[in-house]
Amino acid sequence: MYLGIDLGTSEVKALVINEDGEIVTSHSVPLTIQRPHPHWSEQSPQAWWDATDYLMTTLKDKCEKHWSAIKAVGLSGQMHGAVLLDAAGVVIRPAILWNDTRSALECAELEEIAPELHSIAGNLAMPGFTAPKLLWVRRHEPENFKRIDTVLLPKDYLRFRMTDKKISDMSDSAGTLWLDVAKRDWSDALLEKCGLSRRNMPALVEGCEVSATLAPEIAKRWGLNPSVVVAGGGGDNAVSAIGVGAVSPGDAFISLGTSGVLFVVNEAYRPAPASAVHAFCHVLPERWHQMSVMLSAASCLQWFCRLVGVTELALLEEVAQLSDSEKANAPMFLPYLSGERTPHNDPNARGMFHGLTHASNRATMGYAVLEGVSFGLADGLRVLQESGTHIDQCSLVGGGARSPLWAQLLADVLNMPVVTHKGGETGGALGAARLACLATGKDLETVCKKPEIYQTWIARPEQHTSLMKRYTQFKSLYLNDLHFRTH
Image 1 (tube, rainbow, N blue to C red):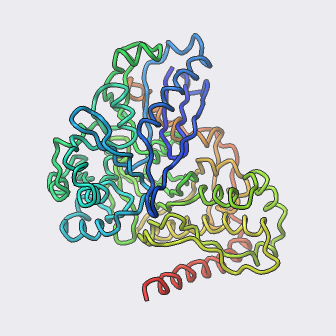
Image 2: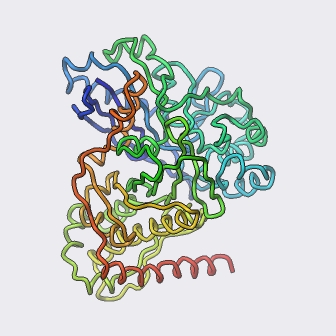
Image 3: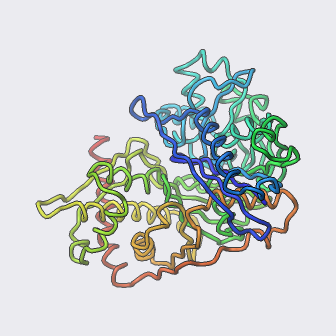
């Protein structure tokens, strides 16, 4: 038996799989985000731990006699978050999250003081990444900065509470802008530019390796054997890749969660920072990956549903009743509720409905939201293709994978097959459990087989042609808004 824990932005999810890789049980606990100021996005690391601790009690009750058979734990987590610990291991301030955009000025500063950034870290300086957050803390909260002993990523804070060890992995650490991504090691030069050193960083292991064992008091509290090992784990998208069997070059998937990600496995380190493509380490040795990332995806749908007072399921049913003509004349939606990364790297980008008329209603506006997020992913596919990456087919994971309507729309927009898997919404937690299996010595080909396909969505040529006309309008809307904001 193996346990996977996925620390997301909106929830902590955990599941247990058996020796055959089948899901035995799962559960999740919701989380909230604090936005005390414009551009800010924060969470309490203690809230993560409390949710995880509660999950363990719940899963133990669900598993009953099988619980004690757990051999290993895997971790997956939201990337880039800055968890600042003092010398006593106490959290100094709330964690600054991946979708926090306060550090735009610090990004410009980092690009200026670290001309080697792109070649070493393989990515542009973006407010979501960890390094600019620390420059912001140094400038605006100098007393907090002086207290910093260790900087941890979100899932690694859970590991610290579970094992008393400060350890990370290469995939998650690649999102800090302090990692030499080709060498899979910390860059002393980039750390120094932020007033830090290796001493402030956790030790590094591969995501599929053993990082530590449970601390005796935690093992006792959770009713687990103290010999239970904790795998290195990884950033949420790289671990989700393990969950859908994306382990070979060319394997790709779309994650429709709070953010939207188009992920493809590479056989080598292939940075393309000019177009805001992310190049990170995979959770497997000698594997890397590229990603296009949009900051608001399924969260746009959640936002709209809260705004108009409808459940997501009810809204999707209304959208499904729309005619092709109503969709073709629906408003346009820019999904930049938290700024945007790929391809714009624009923290000041904003969401927008355009083309509203008296005929606009909840259903057509709901469709516009789904379409706008899909167009954002099309932007990502375009720059990945321009960087030389070829994708034949995408798996679909995350909460958005539950919607057949959205899956078909993505296939039509991207003009490629999109496949959903049974249990696809559990990608991160399942991948974490699979990493736990690998950490105990199980074979990669056996553990990381692709899950059973639930449904395949084929692009429809007529719909693709029609959607590309609207996609052209979508791109011009952003450019017009950018011109308005900068002139």
